[in-house]
Length: 49
Image (cartoon, rainbow, N blue to C red; front, side, top):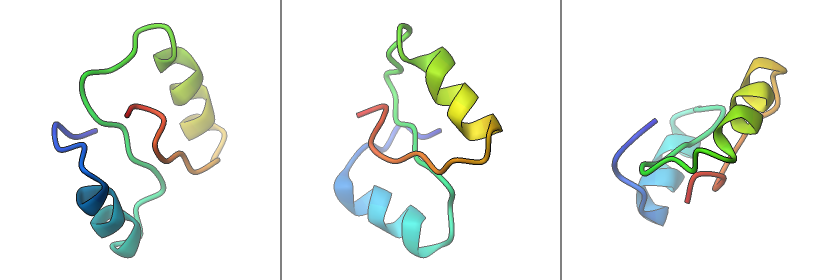
């Protein structure tokens, strides 16, 4: 999770081998599903943006 939500930051995270990217502010309605995806091993990108 990061406060930096730019596409450049997301790309750097991908290149560094991150499995996902959640940026602030979080969407409280979508957050539980995002956590389920993370725990299931599915990469997540863009979901918090």
